[in-house]
Image (tube, rainbow, N blue to C red; front, side, top):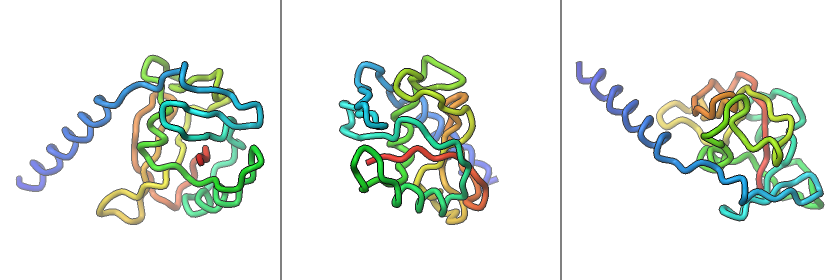
Length: 147
């Protein structure tokens, strides 16, 4: 009974956190013309188009760390809050600004954030709906790097 109550509380808090986040504002996203997008609201630079390759979590980390794009080499896998900032709550399939991020798939994209208490799982976002989930790190998902 106690475990069920804790799990219900966890789901309630997680749902509240997801619903409370602001929608990505398209007016803050600017195509830099070099394969990157600047989000002036967060100051983050994003990989404009993913390479459509699904990777395990560890390979996703390595891919971003090895990426050279827009003349820069300081790319990394985004944290879940950073990745969540791209979700446009007023859109679905994909739930992202398609002008800024053309060709975004509606499947999962990895974040660098490991699920608390479950080191073999990491958070990711389904851009079909913008929902946040966890996935085993041994499974494959797509990647959008940030700097």
